[in-house]
Length: 376
Picture 1 (cartoon, rainbow, N blue to C red):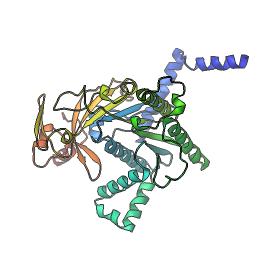
Picture 2 (picture 1 turned 30 degrees about the vertical axis):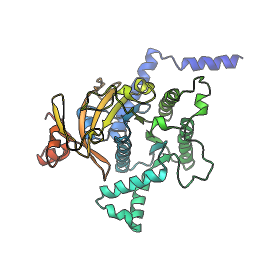
Picture 3 (picture 1 turned 60 degrees about the horizontal axis):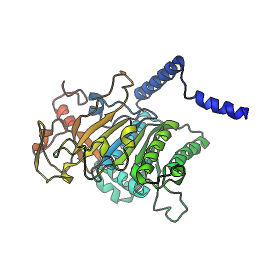
Picture 4 (picture 1 turned 60 degrees about the vertical axis):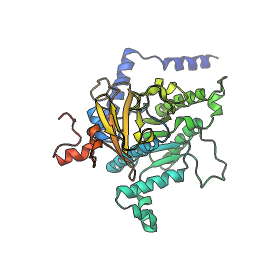
């Protein structure tokens, strides 16, 4: 009885931080984040010009970044773009410890990998290489050199006894990845855990066993909180994709349909508990092609690959400067459908031109630093 009391007391002690404990923990937290950033292996936002200018600092272990959009507005493509960006950083640093986790509630592993291989071929400028055996093997070897672990269902294992794709099993799978690598004497640092998408996860009987009300939105709320705990436990930065309602209540206007935080489908818990969030909107899916739209003092044309991005939330401080983080801004982006890459456009009015230059291309042509602040 006494040992149980001590055990409970020890648990309570873990909730209490003396001034010295708090300062020590915070200092270690800031220093570890700074070291990760300096090494180039923190989970950086994949569009450098926006990350540096705004800023959107690297995602730190235990934090969750939500990418929200209505269906078919590019959130899964943005996730794959971000994973590819993180993979390039791992290659550049030649690290064998850092891994990326991709959890998919819907897409088969083979479907995800086929998309990744085609994008890689497009980035190399040789899309036709995937139609030939040698080219396919070369791309497969390149992609296979980066430790991206996929958690989800597959066509190859469809006839096997596979556990349901829920949050409990996703957590266990992440721990199992760490165990398997440890058996090979390889240390594991989780560079990022990507979840696509939170509302599509299978019913989790274990998580919901103590919840009397079994309505779906409570399952989503429980899943998101579990995902946050998973990211803190590993530890790892988390990127969570969230589906938005088809009818938006918190978009800035009829000609700017970037969802607000409370437009996320089935649960307000995501809006409340996520650390940061962006929303995406592709005007071609809601307006007529080539239509010229006005929003506030902005004017832009609906073109096939235009995507608007809105920063809907940033909680906390920049780990380098300790300054508070801004939110609310919009950026026009161009999506390259072949490579899956997103590029910043300098001004919305650029869409009115025949050939739209990305901000990067324009500043290179002017002999300027493409990543410098746009006001310079």
